[in-house]
Amino acid sequence: MSQITVRHDANDRFSIDLRGHRIVVDQPPPASTDAGPTPTELFVASLASCAAFYARRFLARHGVADGELVVTADFAWAADHSRVAAVAIRLDTARGIPETLRPALVRVLEHCTVHESIRQELAVSFHVVAEAAPALA
Image (cartoon, rainbow, N blue to C red; front, side, top):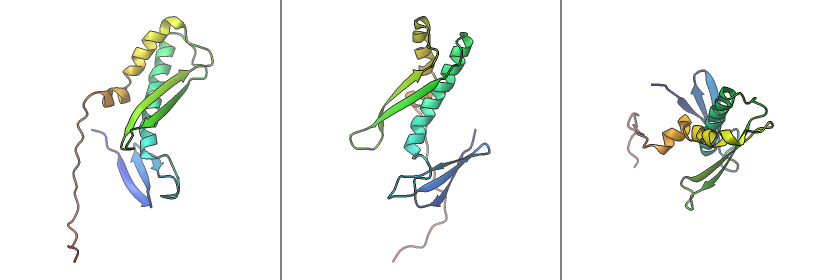
């Protein structure tokens, strides 16, 4: 099992440490200082970058030059702003993708690890481990 550690920095800013890398997440002003993307933006970016990785590998396998591969993700919030309701991912290359490869490429993108992880039922558990604080009067 892999481990990621998130530490509070200040206000709504947190540092994420994983495999020797550090990522900062934050909230825009006035809540905090906007030192990094929000966790929700990072979630959508994770999906888009996973799709980009799978697309590049697919294109390389089919002899399509990498060119300038660009993946964009537009997302919409649910009406109550409690979750991401929709993500639209668009893949562009400067050199184009043959029409005959496009259906297979879409199928490959649909099976990127992040998409598969959110498409299937995901087991998430929360455990609170802390010393008990004294009762408030």
